[in-house]
Image 1 (tube, rainbow over the protein chains, first blue to last red):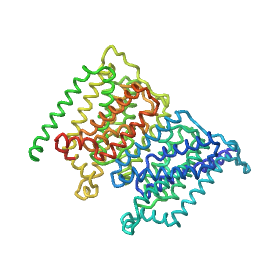
Image 2: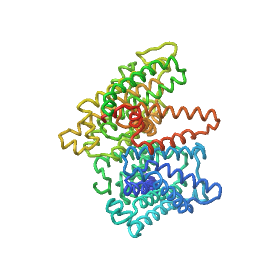
Image 3: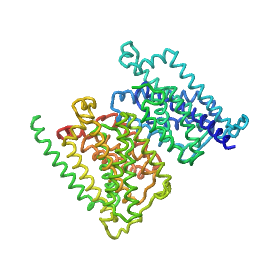
Image 4: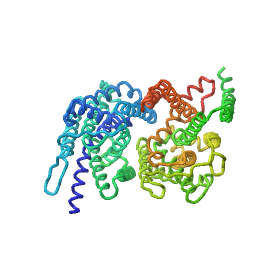
Amino acid sequence: MAAEIYLNVAVNGVLTGLIYGLMALGLSVIFGVVRVVNFAHGEMMMLAMYAAILLFNTLGLDPIVMIVPLAGVLFALGYALQAGVINPFISRPEHSQFILLVAIAIIITNALLIFFGPDARNVQTAYSFDSFAFGPLIVDATKVYAASASIVVAAALFAFFRFAPLGKAIRACADNYTGALVVGLNVKRLYAVTFGIGAACVGAAGSMLVLLIDVTPALGPAYTLLAFIIVITGGLGSMAGALLGGVLIGLTEALAGLLFTPSAKSMFSFGLLVTVLLFRPQGLLGKKA
Amino acid sequence: MWRRLRQRGPSRAVALLALLLAGLCAAPWVANDYLLTVLITILYFAYAGQAWNVMMGFAGQLSLGHAIYVGLGGYTAAVLYVYFGVGPWIGMFAAIAISAMCGALIGFLAFRFGVAGVYFAILTIAFAEFARIGFDHLRWAGGSAGFFLPVANYARNDVWNLRGNPMLFYYVMLALTVTAFGLCHLLLKSRIGFYWLAIREDEHAARSLGIDTFRCKMLAVVISAGMTAVAGVFFAFYYNNLFPEQVFHISRSIELILGPIIGGIGTLFGPILGAFLLTGLSELMQALLAITGIDVPGIKQVFYGVCLLAVVMGLPEGVWPRLAAKLGLTKHPS
């Protein structure tokens, strides 16, 4: 009996972790290429989540269907942000970049507060309470759909960076900035594309996560931190690491919530982060710098 | 011309400093209660920013979790006062000791294991968040319901127990800010200050010149943490309440470091100027919104964010270096 509870919680944790992983993937891609830590990551996801809620409430569009369009919208936003504001900052010191992105985060959070108010909102779909039963194992249908969608998006991204010429060009910028300039790549534009891709990841993750949690504008920093924890655990700049980190953190939080108290669950994530930072600073799958 | 400016520079700076100090000393007799509260906030941020600046501005170690030292300092002094009747001036030493030890622990782990740059910054956030959630579950320190100090009787000022009216807190905070300024000035002029600057500019070069970078960086973290703890003690006794959700939150850490970054990182005047600019801006916006009647929650912060964006894009070095050049003061050696 007890074993079944643990199994259920663990599976649900892994499924949620896959969505976290997709969110963190965006952060990892941005850092891996542009070398800027996106301190507005969670806030950008809030933007996508509120867009999904708005579309659901006004037009009745299912958030799962809106994954691709919202990713597109966030791509455009990320592209514009990098091209317009962040590009001049890539050679500036970290604290300068940090303040820039914090300023962007403050603007996003409070703009959402102005338009949507401080109350928690969520989305209730027709399948909100459906679940699949595999023997003793019961999983929420929503989580299964969302986690599958994350895997699809992540796989598409892997393929893009592996095979598409644009993806290869971006990897070239990450590997050798000067070299990329020498062979005639437009690095600034590729950085903008990269930031757009990172933003698209949170756009997709946000439209899935909106099915699972109640959203308030103040949640942004918590998700930014979550993304940090995941990427550093998995290895900053490593795509597979981000997914692995997401699953690990999802699992840790779910089990900690069961074994101890749910409100203390992120303590264990931070504990995991500190342990990883101390014994393997480059992350589980990261390459040594 | 250049030489004359250089010779006159320091004396001008001293004159400016004296003028500022005189103005601040006289302020409570001119200002009303509201303005006094604003000035206390400004001085609080100037002090805390100065403390953070030791670590980042001097030694180049970016801490994004300074709220942990504010919180530990505040909780230590408050718990000692409420449970054991130990006054804040004594409690302050315990607060400094505990915060400094926490800083030493973080610094030791980070510097020994080679956690640097962005990773170090995120490690500091992780410790602050860890403390926040930990204190949320610490029953005897109030947990998430908060820890309260008995509210002061405003009729009489009790300097020894830090109970009294805003005027008392104002002068205490002013004294702290002046002390911090003096201490930072001395530190910058001392051997360790030059070591720090060397580490900030190029750690490898500093090391190859024989500087014990580990020891210097540890010292920076410990001094910065200890100074920040005093801000925490003040915070606890001024507001009379401590909520983990508030004191340890990441937004507190960010709030604390915006001032020195906007003002000019690594300068002595930067944190003070930054505190004046940011708190002033925030209060000004509050007043403007109240007058125009469009006081929607969040709109003030949006303007604040836009201003921050404008400053960081327009003045990457911060406001003070530019202002100092305009005023004809020599640039600080840092």
